[in-house]
Length: 284
Image (cartoon, rainbow, N blue to C red; front, side):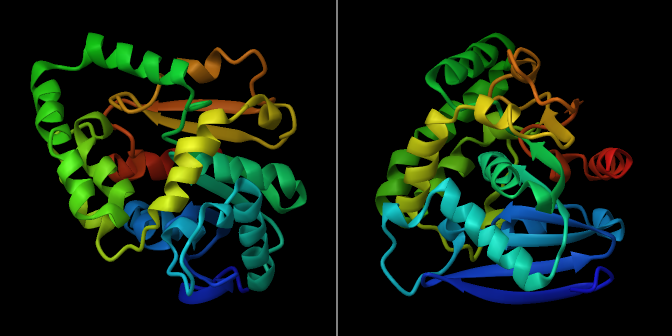
């Protein structure tokens, strides 16, 4: 794959899942795992002047020729899918990026295929999604969120059950949208446009977010990964624990950099695109 390729798309079949891949930009290859469509919308256009952004679906977002089941997905399966795509594209080495829960996918890939990864970017992610971490996030919310933000949340979350009941296949999307008061610096931001025309498989999201990520042991990654790791978080992100959780790890990454965006919530690349581009360009 020519590193100066400006824009291209392809679909890769993996056990019946049609993984969409979009390549856009030029420069250092940057693998971005999650939904190719979603993150193509999130990642700043100006970033693509400096990086060859390779947006990759995981199976939770990919159309399937079969009825999805929980056993179809795991961190290992996702890592193998990414590696298959990397080889198919002919990319020798790349930076890998994961946002939110996809950060754990990026870490798992880097751990399994260290020779293919030069650096890792984790955005909007906490060291784990344990009960203790959620309690810490809730404490920050209670102590720091303004009354308007809290009122917005209560109004939105009261409609979540009805959303899921009427459209269970998009459960993950409904949860994200109804948590907007906790996810965005602008607590009334309407993120529904980001999710338009996306395939979602609830059984796969329940498996990863509800089971696998809840039991993540970050030490298995901090002890194994030797390449530089950039952690990017929003000061106004009430959906996950505070950035200080990364600094409090008994064993952090050997080459760890933490940057906090003062005017962002859960998604700094969309909320502060110019600053996000500047930080990532300078660090990489």
